[in-house]
Length: 126
Image (cartoon, rainbow, N blue to C red; front, side):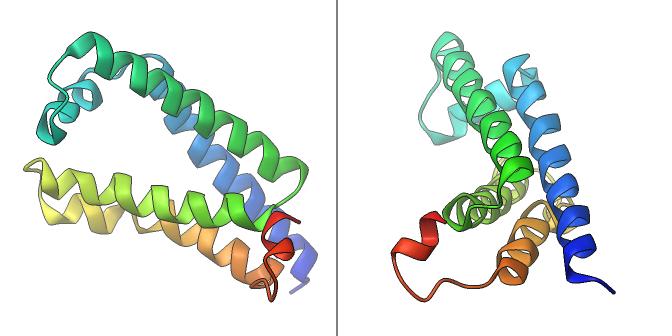
C-alpha cells in the first residue's frame, strides 16, 4: 500500500478520536468529571474546568495532525491516549476498558512511526 494513503488514514483516525473525546470533555462528561476525585481533585467545578481545557487541547491537536503530523504532538497523543485508557481500570472499571482502547494510543504511535522517529531534538517539532 501507499505510505501516503496509510498516513492519511491514520491522520483522520487520530483526529477523529481526539475530536470525539475533546467534544465529550468540552461537554463536561459526568463520569469523567467524577474521575478527578480519584486523583485528589474533588471540587466538581475545578474538575469541569480542567476537563474543558483538556477538551480544547485534544481538539487543537486533532486539527494540527490534520494539517501536519508534528512528531511531538503525536508522542503526546500516544501518551495521553494510553493514560486515558489506563484511567478506566484505575477508577474501578474492568481491565477490558483499557484493552478496548488500544487504538487510542496505538494509532498516534503508528502515525509517529510512519512519519519517522526523530533523530534530533529539532525533528520532534517538524
